[in-house]
Image (cartoon, rainbow, N blue to C red; front, side, top):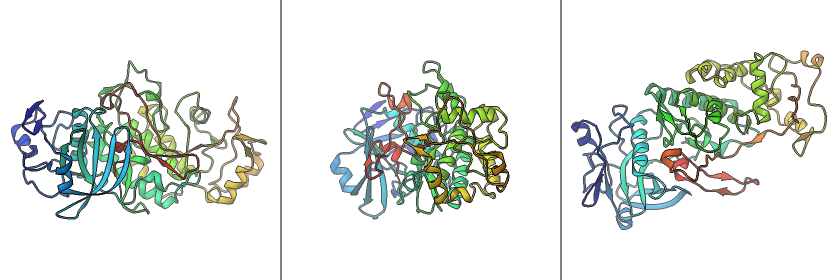
Length: 436
């Protein structure tokens, strides 16, 4: 890394022609590309660069006054451990964009540029957030611009313990499936698929985009495991030792995608962590190990139709090599996924009466004779897993991977906004995940 007046250039192994097209003019005030142009223009190198190499990007240094000259600050969209996201308007064009400020003492320049270049290389997909030709640093932050998603993120619209209407879920499944399939076709893995990273352009999910590529890595590379787990973390990652790490595969995204679909349909997590100590996960794993027998279903899964259960079996196979590709879910979109009876509030309320303080007050089983009279989309009540009580489902909440001893580049650590117990306040965290 070298100093060139007010600019800094990051060396790379890219050919000279590519370097020239990406170099930042010292007079461009933070805009990437020789055109110098609009903050709404798109990065012009979709899919063509070895994005895991350091990019030949020259990053200009701007003062707070320089930033204020170009952009009118509208409001702060999010703030957290690693920085903030501001909604601004370009003073000349009036275009609204999101500026992501990443605190320098929390993130290395190499990590920041990797996320920027990865997002730029993928944003030719209509289902991936688009980065803009805006890249600069201030005294304490690295900054880049991306398109503004006015409807927030997917987490904001999922009703806790209820879930979204099935048609909305299917629209999300189709768009996210196409986004992930495109990423995987580039031999990359997102590694952080969850509702916080799905940005909305309308509240009906007719146009959504996948965001936040800070943890994205190439297939086959070995990475360290971060401390802790979240419900979207695949079991092989949960089991990996920190020293040994694990190999990155597309099956990691497939697992997270399956958990995300469950969350959208129910408003709950299927489990807190894919580990044997988690009663809900262990119950699901035992059912899978037994061959997913008809007639007994894990307690959180009996609301789903047989077609939906077949889909989840393929997405959430315990062995990574047995998981399907994300596009395989498209054949299930034409089927009903949730039983109509179990979708009703009256049924959920009746079920809720059986629990107090998280433990069932009565039997959690039902007779096979009563089950046999149900429709093909209704399942008999499962037996309580041996050695466990019938616990309440894990409520949906924003998920945080935490590793305070490592840099963001090494751990891929993210934090996000989260709801408190009353769902009436928001606790803000990292801008990298909020990504609006």
